[in-house]
Length: 430
Image (cartoon, rainbow, N blue to C red; front, side, top):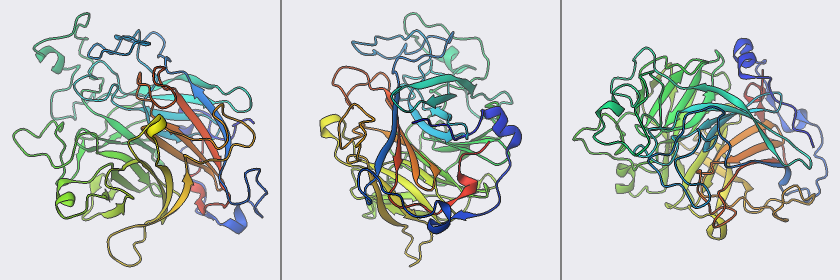
């Protein structure tokens, strides 16, 4: 099966960046009568599966991983910048994807030599089972010095008391690294600019199509993590790595909805340890208030959050297990209207990623197919009946498919038994 139905390239997308007419694909109008599916009429079915090898590096790039130990199979430092850690994605109409790498190797402290970047990949269907790395589209930078604190490649490295063996400070160039931010969610606006939700602040970041910061980092009102660069002697109230793991965009492209991965200390103290906040950002500023999403367990976390139409969204909710310990990896359809006015969004199960029918044997992992990764951080709506899902492989970690072999970047498409009411402005375009 060929997956060729998304955009041509980021340049074409940003040059054309026009919205389709406002419309919602209703179940009756979008694709006609519900087709028979091999897994049964009421079961999600695996429609495509492919992988990008874990040891895929940006050609000719700087070595990385000097602050890490790597693994037995992939010792550090690494020969280049790994194309890994997919924490956000944007589907293009030709079947390719923009993929956002996170901060690199898991924390601010060990990711100073990881350049923050957006890559382009193309999954191949049928028997190929391969995902192609098409190139690195951009690396993020702050040439206009909008960040009001020191960045790694412009003062941070020079001020470091010690450096690991084999690493020397790069010439100042205002490019951003995992020491500066931890990008976790990505949206492309109608004007072609990029909005990124990150976790060290947590902040919302606004970049142009070349990855250059357009305005100062937008802080979250009343929320700071221990890694926040402006914390000083202040008290954090959000755990590390619990920032904006997901960020939806409205069909008209004017409203962002960044969503925290974990509960704040205030919510925990109020008996709301299972509550994730969904904020609203308009014209580059947070509005007052927020909605809450209730997890099935306080131990769970957010994987991703995207809109389907003006009022509905999809959430990835997952446990912290991997491999044999993975139990809960699910997609929920969320109603953002808060019809009863209690501040909580509604939700219903859409797909259990630990139980997806694979009658055609598209993956090598049997039927039913399971997706037992610690972090599953990417979901996209391709059409009213098809979702794409990817994992963050946490390079070079193992545990999802093997106890020793590093996890790969897996891509899957899931055919839904019932169509979503998709606003066509949110579908892949170019």
